[in-house]
Amino acid sequence: MCSPLPDMSDNSTSQSQYQYNVFLDDGYGKQHANFNTIEDMLFEVFRNEENGSIDSISISEFLKALENTGLRRTDPRLKDMIQNLEKHQRRLGQSNRSNFEEILLGRKEFKHIIYKNIVLISRALRHQFIIPDWLAFTKKIDDIYETVEKNKNGKVADYISLLAREDPEMFGISICTVDGQRYSLGNCTHPFTMQSCCKPLNYGIALNELGQETVHQYVGVEPSGQKSNDLELDTNNRPHNPFVNSGAIVINSLLQTLVKPEMSFAEKFDFISTYLKV
Image 1 (cartoon, rainbow, N blue to C red):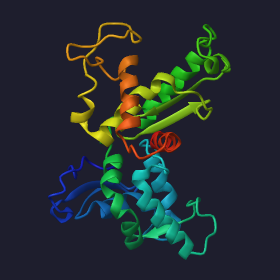
Image 2 (cartoon, rainbow, N blue to C red):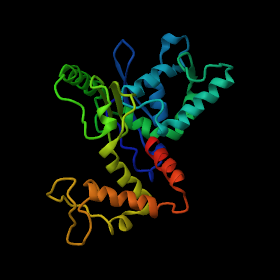
Image 3 (tube, one colour):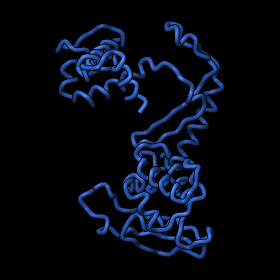
Image 4 (tube, rainbow, N blue to C red):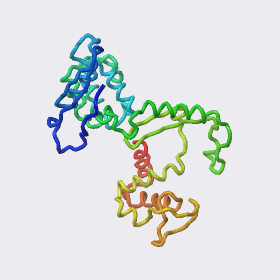
């Protein structure tokens, strides 16, 4: 088991200046060790002498440990690591590029494969995400899901035709934390219309593309105190915030007129759709 490790978020300090203190348990008692790099420390933690080589690790065990922190193999922040694994797999002549279960990596190979994503990986494995005990958290979500799923009361919204046609038995949960930890269960892949769920996402796109100063010339950031569909303006003649209907309309107008104005309506739709999917 690893002891707490120093924070690597300060990129101004080189890795060689750190000493990573670890307690390794080989079944005969804990032994203290320290390493100059986080990669060496991780290699020792995951090194398994039962795999037939005392200087290699099973990449499947390593990936499983990452997934247990809430990261997925499809996380774009792990793209470099996954691409390096695929390259290594091709060098081995293995055709199934998506399956890394049988890959054993030596120390040098392991360090090369993970080094570009080491900050994210080290944060995950040192339990420094917003939800450090991800497995305990997802167990609670499972319990909540099983309880709520039994509730058959209520009905689907009928004021929008697309919603009225939805199957009332469909129920799913998808979670993404601020650190990108993700979990889904139930009918989580069933397509549905996003409706007002688009409001914060469109607001984020507008901020990203136009900047805060431009966006907030047209929409405020305060609660209105009114119903979301009331057409009310603040003292600066702006909608109170991007999440009431009037504010959402203004945000959509900014996306259409100020973000890449050279695009046609169809091109703009594809641009926003791609933004949301990524």
